[in-house]
Each structure stands twice: as C-alpha cells, then as structure tokens.
Image (cartoon, rainbow, N blue to C red; front, side):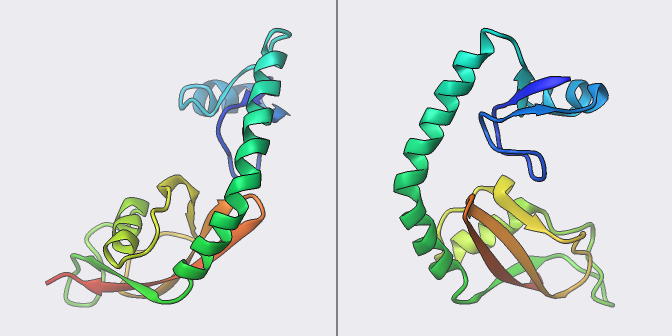
Length: 149
C-alpha cells in the first residue's frame, strides 16, 4: 500500500515521504495512529506542503538542536522509580518518566516520541537513551535509574 507519512516513523521515513508498506502495517498501525494517510493523486499537494514546511523548520532548528544536544549530554539524569528489594522495578521505565526527569533536572524539553531506548528498563542501574533532536542531530542521554523514596 502506498502512503504519505505525516509524522516521523523510525526506520521508515520522515513527514512528507511517500512509502510503500504492507497492507496490514498500514491499516493496523500507521493510519489509525495518524502517522500516515493513504496516497492519492490529490495528496501530492499535501506532500509538497509538508515538505516545504519541513525544510523551513529544519533550517532554523538545526542550531537549536545542536544547542539542546550539548545541554542534554552534559550530565546523567536521575529517574526515580518504585522497585523491589533486589533492584527489580515494578513494571518498566516509560519514555514519559525519562522526559519528566530531564525537565526536572533543568534540561531542555524533549518530545517523548523522539526518545529511543534499547530494550525495556526493568532494573535499577545506568542506561543510555538516544534522542533524535533533528534528522542530522542525535543526542545520547545517560540515565541513572534509582529507587524512589
């Protein structure tokens, strides 16, 4: 199925890209979540408008992204979570908890959808996460998952 992406999808593309995906992936994941719309001939105008807006945002935002990257990578952010005696968590750490910890520590506001963590965080310890601030700028954030008091 041919689609027009309206949001960035990791491993697939950025807003305004026209992609070809399997029908089930499109019907069950991309379209219901608003990440894409079906491609039509009239949709080509929508693609051009999305790409023009993206180019305008990218030119002014690349400097802001580099500045945010420097501020993010300066320190490790403590993420307090409930845990058991052996250091195992009750559940796992979510992206919203990580974003809240970054903001609470005085870091820049980060979109939770741009945050990527390898695997689920289910124990106390030190982890790293990647934040996609701009298509050309990635920041690596150090997370210190600690027991909540």
